Image (cartoon, rainbow, N blue to C red; front, side):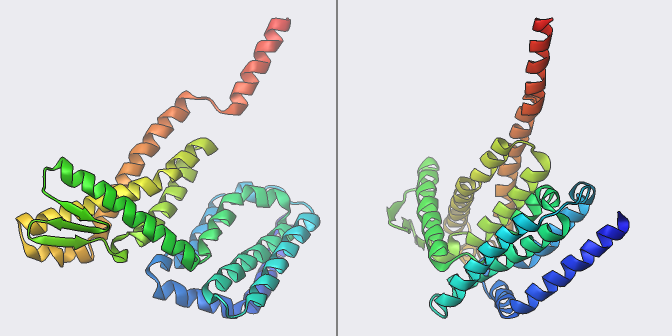
Length: 303
């Protein structure tokens, strides 16, 4: 079995190397994108994290091999179709075209994994392969929409917090007029980068600490509102410190580079939700156990 595994590993490595050569230009552009965009810096860590998860779960992932020719062929055809679409777009929407090419590349690698190790291994490695989707650059129109929603949501919650603190304030769209200070929630204040990092962190934590899909979905869906609340708290705190303590806070460290502080705040909120869901799961037996209990109950009643 060990020799079989090594042979399969060699085949998979060779196929991935071929795909990397074929998509060399796209992978180079992806690296440039990750280094030049704030909301793409996480891309460099996605592959190492996925490989680490597969290594940690290697006993489950590689516990059984089988023929994966048919499912691999299906994934390969989908990848080929996406690649054709991406090349047909050409230079029109280069960023969006790159997203399609990277998705095609990931599907080609998934096809190779399925062919070499079988569908059982792919099922066991479903999460690390799905996690690789974070490699795909977010299309520009999606980023703009997310930033706009974050700006509007943060402004609304910030207004509520200002009113709660009895600070006289007037809002005009994304601009707040506070005594001696006019503050605009710019795109840079939307927190798009910390939102993506917080989402990735939450996805990983939910995978390792929660067992049900429902609980995982709930905690992931909580990321967006928590990001809005986190951004609003940052806006209010910096504004109040600027108005009542020192004008330097407006352009100081807390404003320019203090995102990590409020990222930790958002993470603590999510950890609280995660802990509550974990307690709920411990009180609720898995569906398999419930089915087993019901079947035992029916057997007892029959007797």
